[in-house]
Length: 501
Image (cartoon, rainbow, N blue to C red; front, side, top):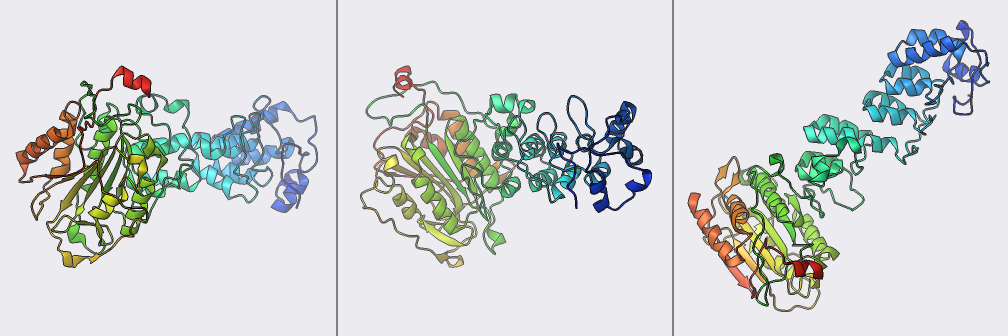
C-alpha cells in the first residue's frame, strides 16, 4: 500500500469513478504529482468545504485538486482545516489520503490544531491512527499535549471532572503553562501557572488522583496524594482560595530577635505536613466527615504566613511512614526555619498512638524520634511543633491491631526543640462539626489568623485554649520537650536579617 500524502507528495487528477475505489487503491492513485493547471476556484471551494464540513463537496472536488492542496501562506492542508474547524467526518475521510503527521508553516500537525481549539472528538480520531507521531513539536517547541493545557486548566477551574478526565486520557500535560490566555490574578498573585498547581490549590482530590506523577516526583498514592505542593503557592485575596473558613491572616508587624528567640529565615519560614485521616478500612462508623475541610483551612492559613508543605488524606500506615521518612530526608529542610506536623485522626486513650486508614496504630513517640537531631540533622536547633488532633468518640483499643513502626537505626540522643500540642487533655475528645469544619482545627485556624503575627507560642496556646472554650469543652494540653526559646509562627523580619539571607 502506497504511503499517504506528506509534505513531499502531490496527487494527480481523478475521475469520479476512481474516487469510489477502496482505500488501498486511493493511496496509489494519489501518489503522483498534481498538475499545475488546477483551477484556483476549485481550490478555494474545497478549502471552504473542509472548513464547513461539506463532505460531498470534498468528494466531488478532490478528484480535480488532489488531497495535497494547501493554503498559500499558512500551508494548511485540507486535514489541517478540517481539524481546526471540528469536522470529524471530514477528518475521517481525509485520513485515507493524508498523513496525520503532515505539518503546516509553523510545524503544527492537525492534532496541534485540534488541541488548540479543544476539539476532543477530532483529536481522538487523529490519535487513533496508527501512524500518528504524538511527539512532533511545533516551532514553539510544543506538542499537541502542551496545547491541551489551557483546556485542562479551565476544566479544573470549573470543576468539570468529566472533561478533565477526557483531556487527561488524550494526553493533556498537567505541568505545562497554559500560556498568555491564563495570565492574570492566578499566575501573578497566586503563583498558579499549571493545571496541576490549580488542582493542588483547590484541593481537588478526585482530580489529583487522575494526574500522573509529575517531574518533581509528587506522589499519587492509593489512599491520598499531595494536595499542597512542596512549593506551596501563596494564597491571595480570592475567597475561594481560603478554605471553608475563608480566614485571612493578619499581616506581620512585630519584629522580634534575640538569643532567646528561634531564628526565622525570611525566605523559608518553615515546612508543614498535614496528615488528615478521615476514613478507615471497614469502619464507616469512625469516619471524620470534616477532615478534608479542616486540612484545607489549616493549609491555607499556613500558606498565607509564607510556609511551604503538603497535605495528605487517609494514608495507610505504610504510606504514612513512607511520607514522613521522605520529609525527614528532604534537602529543603536545611533552609527551613521550623517544621510543623499536624495529625488528625482517632487516638488511643493515653495519647501514645493514632490510627492510619488501614486501622493500624502509629506511635507518636516514633514520630518524634524520626525528627530528632540524630535522625534529622537538617532541623537541629530549630523549632519542631507537633499538633495532635485525636478524636476518641467511637474508637477503642480493640478496634485496631498495634503496629510497631521500624526503629530508626541512627545514633539515639535526647530529643530537644520540640513541643506537642494535643487537642484535649482528657481521655475523650468529641468532634463538633459545622459547615466550616470541626472544633479544634477551626479554633486553631482562628487563633493563628488573629494572633500569630504578634504572639509567641506559649501566649498563642493560651489564646487557643480560650478559643476552644468558646464553643466546646475541649481543653488543649501542651508538652514541652527541650523547647527552650520563644517561637513566633508569623513574625516580622528585620531588614538586616533579610540582607544576611
